[in-house]
Length: 289
Ligand SMILES: [Zn+2]
Image (tube, rainbow, N blue to C red; front, side, top):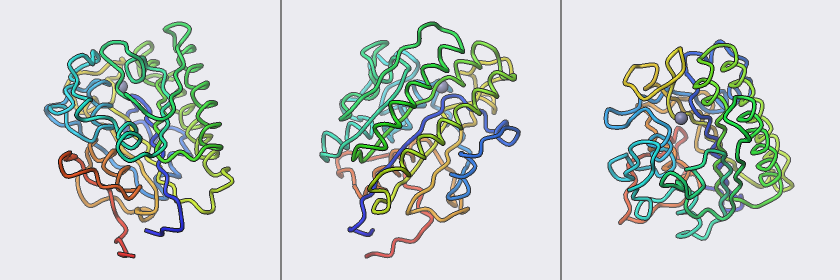
């Protein structure tokens, strides 16, 4: 790892995006992340409900559902005090600056047993004006505007930006044209976040790891929670200094790997008393320098 350069990590979580539809949609910014690194499926394990709460908790804590204790979309009874999300742990234990932007209540508010993100350095929350696809698109838009400003300006080590409109649209309207449009909208917003990163004054002296991840799929009529392959199939895309372009890690990827890779990309080893269930995605050999 080059000590003269600053490492930073951005995780973009896009809720409920079906892997099998990606090839049929215009998602050029996600394609670019894939081409610079990889995009690979994740099969949600047998123990984990195919619901947003448990899957996002696994993604951002790096431990399985039996440890973090979030089994559905009521987060009560969670063990986040012991197994916090990566932004909270980076901030509280390692003194790093972290940023979270999200519009789904239990991720960031004391609602429904939340928040999942207990104590990042900086937090943005936007509430929907109504439970409609249009209102959720507006939430994603405002989240993106705020995140662009922070990412472009501030020295944030680890960020998580959540886009939820595609999932809400599938629940409301099924996996038809509106859902597909919403996924393309999410891709455009991902692009703006990446442009903000690239627009940083310090960018030439920074090494950014970008991870894009979805939590679960959807049945055709919209909905998830069952054990069908389309519901259990999620995906992870990533690029960064530890990842070779076009090389997919030679193993089955899991949601727990996201937080593990975020820590590893920053050169941080979580302490030996707090064992992560995931592993970093490394496809470039560490030079040992
Ligand atoms: Zn979800």
